[in-house]
Amino acid sequence: MTPSRPYLVRALLDWIIDNEMTPHLLVDATWPGVTVPEAFVQEGKITLNIGPAAVEKLELDNQAISFAARFAGRPMQVYLPMGSVLAIFARENGQGMMFGNEPGSDLQPQTESADDAGTGEAADGKPGSTRPRKGPSLKVVK
Image (tube, rainbow, N blue to C red; front, side, top):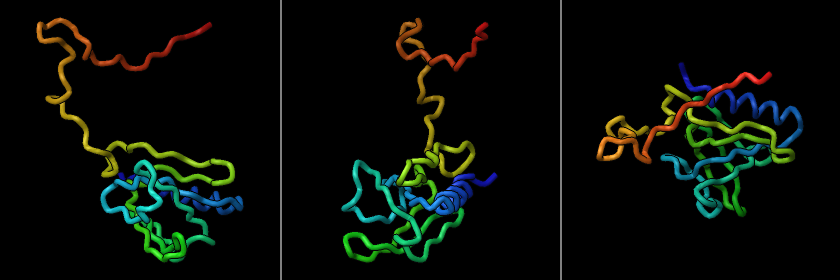
């Protein structure tokens, strides 16, 4: 299946605008292909106002988001590969959605191979500090 992130971003953008709020994107500025004003990047991330009053020629397709905007009075064309979008939210109340890694999509970072992950045993064959974590468990409470 195709990644759901582009569809969710478009839907949430409409929802935020319909509720007369200001849509913002939280973006990973270190993602390959991202074009944003570097002067506004903090700790590898940037928050961008994508409201109709703030941007021109907003295009959202399944691969990327692009638009023209002004930063400190200077015009710039912004390009955001869809994988770089970490969240979309309303500035006024913070409501929106954070995105994780979608299984099976090209938006997922490379994972560690089984050979690199370790066996969970110390060199002497006894369980060591690198034991794999147990999965979540549920308990019935009466």
